[in-house]
Image (tube, rainbow, N blue to C red; front, side):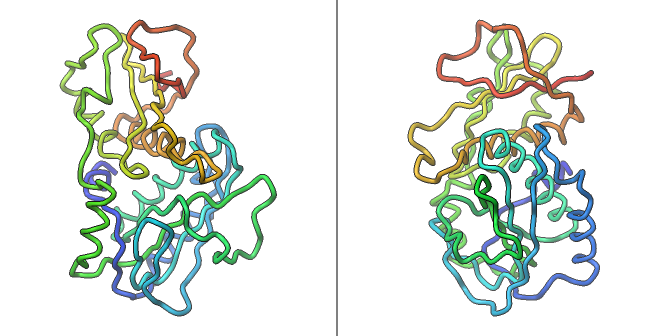
Amino acid sequence: MKKAMLNRKSERTYNGIPLSEEHEKKLMAYLDDEKNRIGINGHTIAIYYQKVVTQKSEKIGTYGIIKKAPAYLITVCKNNSEAMLDCGYVFEKLVLYLESIGIATCWLGGTFNRNKINLVESPAQDEIIPIISPVGYSARKKAMMDHLFRKMAHSDSRKDFDFLFYDHEKTVIEDINLKKQLAYVRVAPSASNQQPWRVLIDSAKNAHFYIHRTPGYGDKLGYDIQMIDMGIALCHYELATGRKHYFVKTEQFTTEKEHWNYVISVGLR
């Protein structure tokens, strides 16, 4: 999946061709395996595959125009921060799997019109549709609007490495192999490319994840979109390092910043 993490980009322009029978079977087999939809906190994320009856260019919320997508993936989960983290973690794994077999996607959150989404089973009162994504094959030529929206969302830029990742004693991480692994976390997608994760590495090479919230960001959405970003970052860390022992730390580090809020830690058993 490392190649997929580096190569994947959000695709807004599709060629309109439905998924091949082989690709559709692989997608459905992935979704039917429940363990693929269980997150770090134990929440099971519902993911629906919906084909588009009449293809058209459609503005989805504030994120951009989706052209000729043959189908969409729709997530449903509990509306709390732990479930949002799990949604980000689970859905990014799916997105990267699809990238690895040649299927394009585009994370869509925020203010898209949820009333236009017709599911066989409506979300429960304590549930929400936080994320959807078109699925299909990329058009050969990138539309001008595609480049414009990438620029508006700062999709091709990332924060400096030393702004996101810290050593618990020296502040700056010097371990070359560790820096290579963390580079996969740095390229993780996030809403408006805010990259709210901060990662502190201790002497045992455990990674402690914190959220540095953008003031006011997502307040009007009705769900914790930046916790979805945290789940995406954790997915990248797990795939890059192979570490998947999640735990809650008990010690305080002097290098922690006042504006960081602790989320979770990852290490070896």
